[in-house]
Image 1: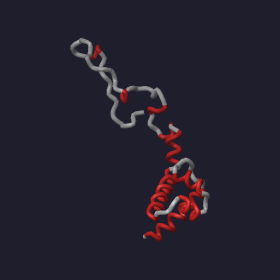
Image 2: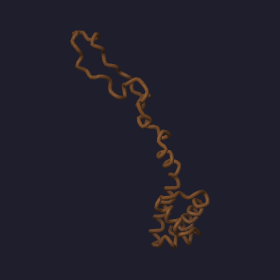
Image 3: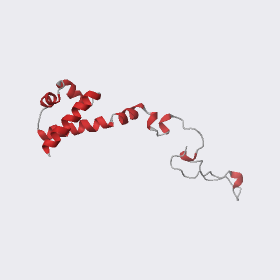
Image 4: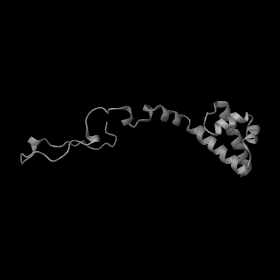
Amino acid sequence: MNPFNYARHTTPNVSETSTGSPSARPGPLPWQRTGKPESASQTNQPEDDPRLVAMERYESKRRLIRDAKALSKLRKITQGQMAEEIGVPRRTLEEWLQFRRMPEAPGTTLIRRWVATHWNKMS
């Protein structure tokens, strides 16, 4: 599959040249080759790489956590204080903020509510 939708050009064979001398042109370029890619990494499709799939799945949570970290810095509070306000153990919040673990739905809701509440107070 040609990802750039360019027309495929082939180099002429030696017999097609008018001079009859061997052609000085190299073979086809990688995107001009017809055939399947040698490995899955050459297809550049995110569904091929499980790490990229996981990153896309957790992107909204990663943004939420980044917003929560920024808000806690603006408020100048510690992770312990933030964890107490959210209602989760400090260690759990620490792992979320350092992206070692991703919060499940209840944790995401708690963080989202905390950010919304304190962002409105900051404005």
